[in-house]
Length: 114
Image (cartoon, rainbow, N blue to C red; front, top):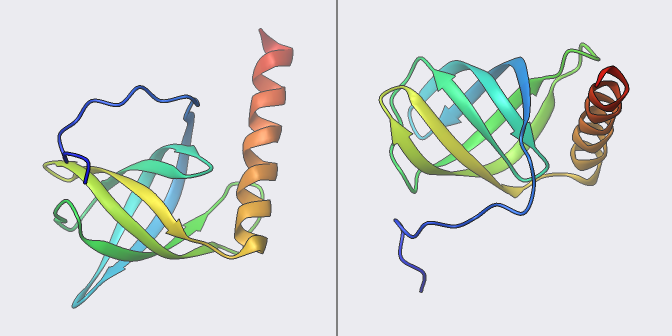
């Protein structure tokens, strides 16, 4: 079993975003802002405390559409106050497609502007 505090170099880039997110854990509903996003994780500044290892259900409203993307299961990886990182564990194929298309469009726009 890997050690929880082991440093891992990412093989992907997270894209800076500002998206509204709601997260549901056992007995609470939190609201936050997704600060950066990739296909399998994100960083959030939330309004409700979470702890590493906690599992959440998440709804992210991407700026390109009104209908939120629901992620059935994410796992909190790290926490610093109300800032936390989460890894996607279970998401529908439709959700994967929407997030993938959104990230691709953001990356294309960045490459064109550079």
